[in-house]
Length: 216
Image (cartoon, rainbow, N blue to C red; front, side, top):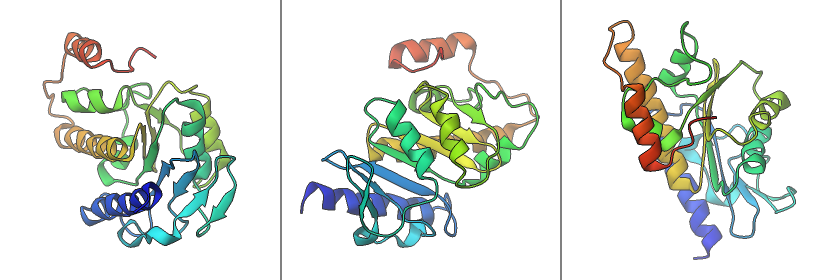
């Protein structure tokens, strides 16, 4: 099996895993990964994470031309913004996961540091998450907003819409977006209870030890 064939299978496996655990329902969410030749594989528009076909993934060449597969997700500007502005990005995942979206609708969240520091892992895997405003699905302005961040954030939250995580490879992107949702879930569960969060000193120790992108 070629490297690209393995990547196609891995994308569909990860997507189905996310779907089966309720992190991406219906035809929501999209996923992309860099191919060995510098192109992209992308989930098609209107597709379900639970039923992706490896042979029908949208295939782009290194110049950004669609060369094979079904029509890609309408969120392509969002994906390409991460690939174009962040070095060594190998995959991007976008979900409409429930707790993350719910948290984005509530007052009092910090748009420059969306996820509260409740555990080490959200910090280690995601860095500082930027909350972006609401955009219509597929709006090019979504990609423009990510580009305006100049590659300083590996993950963003689209208000009333869903989280987006970029990473060096497919496994890391999927692990990161799962940690994103789990942190948001903890935040929702403990909201109004005055939980004991990590201190600023704890956060800085994590940032230093794990070389986290933080002071952006």
